[in-house]
Amino acid sequence: MKTVFWPNRYNYLVWGNALFLLTLLLFNKADPISIVFAYFLETIVIGLFHVVKLWMVNTYGKQGPNNHQMPKSSVGLVLFFLFHYGMFVGIQSVFVFAFFQSKLPQIKEPFHILDNYAAVIQLEGMPVLIASLFVSNLKYFYSNFLHNAQYKEYTPGALFFKPYVRILIQQFVVILSGFFFILFSEGFAAAILLIVFRLVVDLVMVAIRADNTNMDVVLKKITHGEKEFEAAKKNLQEYTE
Image 1 (cartoon, rainbow, N blue to C red):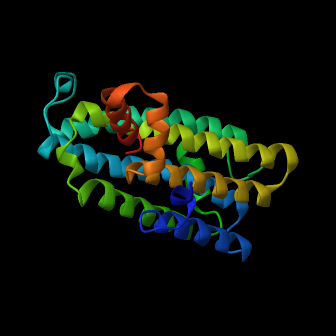
Image 2: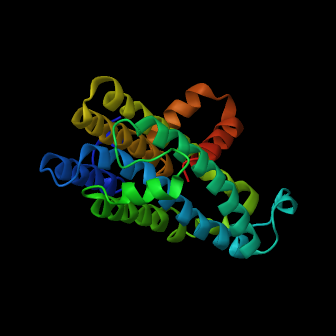
């Protein structure tokens, strides 16, 4: 497990980003609530990068059996994803704003989504936090999708739903840390918890993408035969996209 969690050439940016956020928190350059909402806003950053991925896959990627269910043009595919993903994020936003409404006076009614986003963006340290998460996602996009021409290996249908698994895990961690705010009024502890949980999740995801031998060992124990192992490994790597 040392190769999964110990800093190395695959996960150095994950470690760097976590330590950077921790430094901002410890030196009062960002509020704990800003840390929590920055991770929530990362959902939008991930969606924007996925728009670029879909366009590239639809233009340069493979043709698959499910492609007939997707819009043919890249513009149509992107618009369809923006609508689908926007609805998903919108519903989550209402829930999160309602959850934190009592702790953040700037938040109005949960359904005032745009007004609430405008208020959240103005929280202390938020521009720096968003910039940090953007750089982290940019590096992830370059190393795991662009640099190795991974976009040539996907079909639009196979890639379309990939960010949802990552987003669900991320939002679960955000909500979990939010309970410390609501139940125990421990904002600092909640922010630390969120940074640590996200660090662990991201390290595991990077290890999977890097063909980590520990992941292979685990998969071989829970699968039967080489064919099932290769299929499980491929699916796991795809869902960390």
